[in-house]
Image (tube, rainbow, N blue to C red):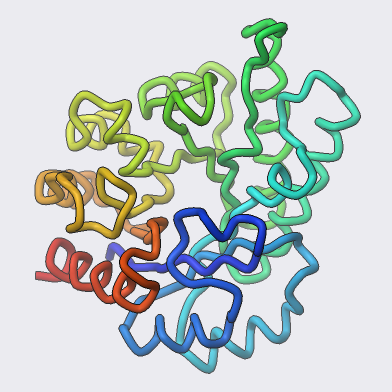
Length: 272
């Protein structure tokens, strides 16, 4: 069964980003539970920013699952990416993500690699940069496998990365480099920019999809833009997707209203 999730960000430096709830973990989880979300997706400054026992108690209290953990703070706070020309920085990026994998795995949740993938720099070599990405994902995929979870790689739109922008290019990269424990994140906002037909891409590359980010064409909650969600939902059902559809969207017009709009849209497309 496809499950719902809502994002909670605990990193003040990214407060302008596409996350529904902010700063107050317990309050965010309380609101998510009241709206009957199945899980929460967390963005934390580091793997040790939250005491695991506290998080476990809150998840149990509110009957929520941990859907996934983001790693973007590694770039936002520390400037680390898997494709940095400096091998020492790449090593630190792998260590940061590895720790996040271990943190999430305690709750059966995968880690997401989005902005920490980096870019091909103007002075860089594309093939060498992609090799660095492949090496990083291989190491981290094996780390995730040893922890009993998979790893999520997110193709971003062209304005955020010049590496891999579509499900097609992402899946080809996973195949070429035999990254069997790495799955793709189908972010509907990014896909609206890069994909010719979102539903068709999901059907064609559905076996690689491990997570879905639920946001409209303008990155507001689903229903506030022009995304045609019905065929996308149908495609996800046709590929027997059973992961999370998680609201990584701007808290428009405010966090509470954004969460309510999201769960209404989720119920409309995935429960009725």
